[in-house]
Length: 242
Length: 233
Image (cartoon, rainbow over all chains, first blue to last red; front, side, top):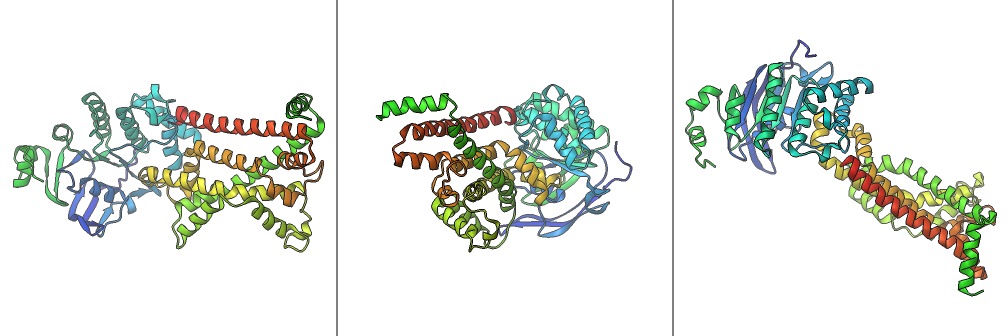
């Protein structure tokens, strides 16, 4: 059950990140409000994944701030933002035990964690796989499990780093169905993707990154019909902008 | 007695459940199993802690534990002997020439193996799990149970490696146990003694048990890894 007080909006201010002397993200500022899917697009090395990792707290910025409405993106001491990675990492356990582990870590009792895990598997159509070793699943199944594992914690925001980049159209459709469900129930999604069709189908807002800079921040419809920056126009036209 | 007859006599000893023979086997197993359990209780958390912690001199500690995996048993035996001897710091406990002393020295030999292999296993797992575990706020010491559980099949192999080293050991238990008949005489020390006395059937019988044990340990290690692949992926 989603609680009423949200950790959003997320306010990112002057975010920069330097790794091994290379400036990989440069002075990014934006807000993320509640609801919908915000898609991060742009060429490889544009800083999309890095931006997600900084927002999720996996990395510390060189300068700038990531500020949540509720302190540290937590409510009642629990982290209320989750992340799904491009290469989903599965624990060496069964499918259901992967969910139970996440829930137990978040403070649920073992019995309650099992109940919620089983319910989540039913909900996302993963119940037939419950007892299979998670690491033996197909790429699409693993990614669906990774999203279920993030969603089962009822976060306000889920960051997704190219979740369908290595999947076929069938698996991509299943993932997009899951994401649409999550959006419908009020989860805010922030997703990096190289799939412009996917961004068109799912996003209501586009953040176009290039060379570590946020070049354009626009409603999806406007971005795809009339991008403001020449670079975004060239990117959408399929030119090699990098 | 020629070696053929000695071999037949050895098999008769095993098949006949000779009480003296069984006592030696039982003591050896009790000492080694206890030593491995103690070493595991200390070594698993310590190895995991070493894998996750960062401090000045950590590389030196890792090299030291890796080097101690090859600690010569007689040196370990000598050190434990000095510690437990009447003039040593633990002399008043009167542990020298007892099964407890043999457990201690075997635990000393097995501990670096368990620490070093646990450190490597947990460090590899942490590298792989880092993003996910950090994402769900499972970091630092709190991550250790998850990492140990997920490394359980590799760690079971480490424990079996430790068991193999301890069960085959002779020099250290001879020094601290004294090879007292019916009290501290293990399979390996008995083989050494009986061979020098020319009593080949008993030495051969124990040798067969020891080799069988080694094969079983290796089979268990192989089976454990297969089970791991099948059930944990």
